Image (cartoon, rainbow, N blue to C red; front, side, top):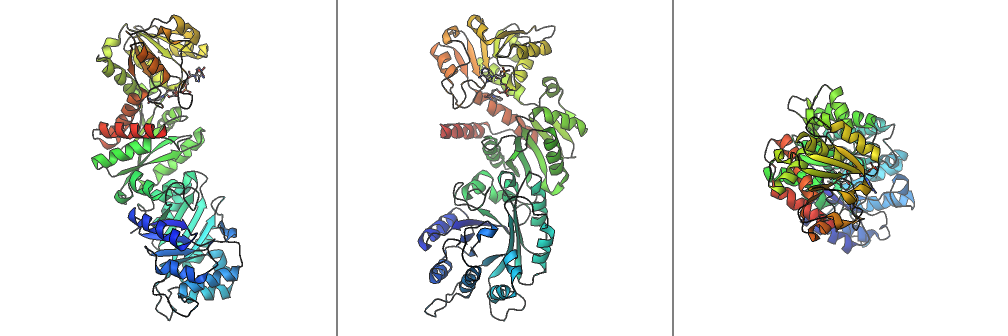
Length: 537
Ligand code: NAP
């Protein structure tokens, strides 16, 4: 069983116990008391353990290992010994001891005297007294994976009194997690292996999948004791901790940056709804193709991970096509035409499939709102504002169905190139500068620029709103805010409006269906998106 251990910086006994009780309510089954700054009164520390609402790990981390304790080393070890013995200054002995004491390997190795003191209070083969407390030997590196990690692990494994091996290091890329997963699965001794920082989240969430002794969580996302730690409710509710097991399939959103993506909330809620054994994580990969290739390949090669698919966003949509082609996978012809794919699917036989769900999402959001079939777009005058990635998918669809499209863009050349690329025998696409929107004669107007997006919510992508009329349909691909100023002005003019939320929800549904082969729970998706966007207001 993998414990969920909430880690708490102790300020006083009452505060620490209240935090531990709350953590227990939220599902933690272990608490780590970080007493780095709470070392004055030994009796208080004994009360901390004696009356703890949960079994506890006690850790007094020195500054030289990334903690806050900067006092005398022998005093620190005496404190640990005191807590382990449970003897108060009046000679009475506490009935309860810590479940674990955490001591840094570096300290343990530094002096025989110190080692002896620690071994007095923990369980080990030569221990004569009945002691339950287990010793966690730990090593931390806040900069990188330590070059001598294996030597350190070896020493911990060899130490008779070491019950648990702990290694934590700053991940420099998502690839570092693989080594953490391997350590978590090792059977020599119970292990805690965690990567720190933004790249390390998978090692924290998937610790249960790989059978680690525990993962550490904060009381909430803000009150954490290590970089990259998340709050207990996030791991339980967003990342579905209770459902994770060895065969859980792993998905995620690949992009740079991805920290604020709504996709983890949407897909995890969807998996929950249809009982799909999956978990979906943010997967930050730096922009260069080599990073994309190295990371995705490493994750795919590590079979126990069951890496099964990903949403792929800026700046990797072109990289995905290139990668899947290089790996002899299949690229959806449409994605190839558009030149961008937003979905990676790993099929049961391990082969890769890259596809684009933005195209169908955009065109169906438009047609469904208008109550028409895609084919009815033939000959309809459409103005597309913008010539970037979103515009490409939409222009490809409009061209395919024969709409009379004009692309308006700040950089005219880009609009011209896009128009040239997608013009065909049934659809001659025009291009123009943004200024030309003043005289646009479009029945449908689609904004594919970020103008009006949070936080610049008062901006509109038009020279002025007077071109908006009641017989128009205005589609803003922006989804944050839900109602952009453009949509508000369009409504004011009596036009029909479509929010980017429609497109966003549909592209996610398309991905979900590819991965799970089940219908996406639309209502759940919409609810999550709207809750998230309303919470961000
Ligand atoms: P992109 O590839 O970077 O393209 C951005 C486009 O907007 C370019 O044509 C750019 O013009 C134009 N632009 C940017 N800032 C501008 C400004 N200040 N003034 C005038 N034009 C400006 O981005 P993208 O991937 O196409 O995304 C564009 C927007 O679409 C996003 O902001 C997002 O809100 C929306 N989107 C929505 C969904 C959805 O599911 N609802 C999906 C994808 C995108 P230049 O060519 O002159 O640089």
